[in-house]
Amino acid sequence: MTTQLDRVDVVIVGAGASGAAAAWSLAETGMQIVCLEQGEWTKPHEYPSTTRAWEAQHFGAYSANPNRRGRVTDYPINEKDSPIAIANFNGVGGGTILYNAHFPRFHPSDFRVRSLDGVADDWPIDYETLEPYYDENDRMMGVAGLAGDPAYPDKQTLMKPVPLGRAGQALGRGFNEMGWHWWPSDAAIATEAYDGRAQCINLSACTLGCAQGAKASTDVTYWPHAIRAGVELRTRARVSQILVDDNDMATGVVYFDEAGNEQFQPAEVVILGCNGIGTPRVLLNSTSARFPDGLANRSGLVGKNLMFHPYASIQGIFDEPLDGSRGPGVCVWSQEFYETDLRRGFVRGFTYECNRGRGPVSTAYSGVFSGRVPWGAEHHKHYRKMVERITGMVAICEDLPEESNTVTIDDELVDPDGIPCPKLNYTLSQNSLDMMDFAIQRATEVLKTAGAYDIMSDAPIAGGGWHLMGTARMGTDPERSVVNEWGRSHDVKNLFIIDGSLFVTCAGVNPTRTIGALALYVADSMKKRLATLFD
Image (cartoon, one colour):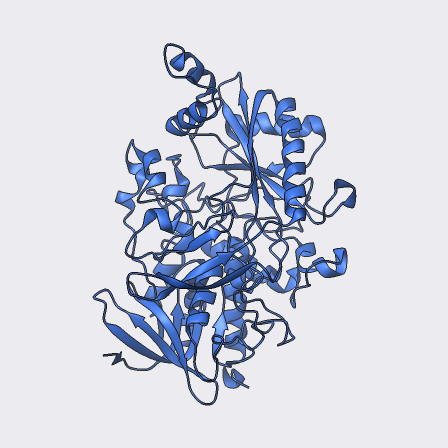
């Protein structure tokens, strides 16, 4: 039996990067806002970085892959037909709990891919539209960086950049000798006390949750402000579907609470912020006589155009001692190969995101399985040649949207509450394969120039599905998009989408900074139109 709750003005589904930003922004209207999050609040004292065995938890309770993690708050994903496995987190803060806090913006050119390069589609908005929301999101999250990066328009700097460390200095020398662009990375990490958060103390293990609170996950940035402003956040509330009336208006959402009881939360406005997998899952599970193919899916594009960032990893072993895993994972980036140059054999480009190095267990693991560290009498000798002597980069390659790359609903797989789960069908394009090959070749050159004597590479990174984009794209044409240019569904006038599924293209950079800016932009667009929101 479903229990019907009191009607609210706004219900937001998902408490991650987008849901938190939208909730905080909309709170100033005085509307009654409820956010439903299927996960829980994390406990910083339980993060792996508080223990010596932190690396082991990459493969268990704090794995980025929900199928491996297997918490009751997770939902399984059929990823058998994808060479890239999903990485996400369900809980207050969403993916920002386990991300690396690498925090680039899109470039102005990323919104005009069709006009510039004749592929994919242009966005219905541009960099200038999002710029004030980038700035606002930066202030709320707290971004460290160095002003003056020639790869970008001028942008604000709130805190000094994270230290380069030995790894960053070595790689910087290599880039300099090659004559290539590089710059200290923007990072959503407090390098000084900021908004009640203490500065980074180099716990490392950023991707396993920051026990210090220096990393800007939205549970410690947006949510304290949103809750003080009156937003209600309900955890262990797993949404199964959105209901609609005969006028194609959403009436609210059905969800299961922690005890497994089914609840119906009526609302005047429904906002989805569940990421590029979770949002199409909710929409495709919300079938009815008026929407037999899934809610807001008269275009047939819900769940299509799935984009990851195919990642290539290129690491070098150096004679000199480096940082190992100490310090924030990010240090520098290079966007030497960001814009299209057809002489390279592919369209669009990528960013080199440079990282510190590996922990002792990861070093041993990779050494043994690559044959560089044998078992037996020579084991420690060869291990010492690798430990704290590895650094390198990943190439974040732009993925072009293709309708054949999809999120659908699996015929058999269900979550702990019996809700049907997503299935992926994803194939790497030849353009992506060529881009990764090129990235490995050029990174090998810069690493050798920097002093590496042995190079390890891998592409694509099989577990690299950190960035989930494109499955409910924005646009002005209802036949070619799911929502309009400010996030409102073409088909359901009181349904809004605010997460990475909005993306028309995915650029060659991490998406979290843009997701936050988009959520603020959509929320602000709603506030400016409150009197005519459903017209």
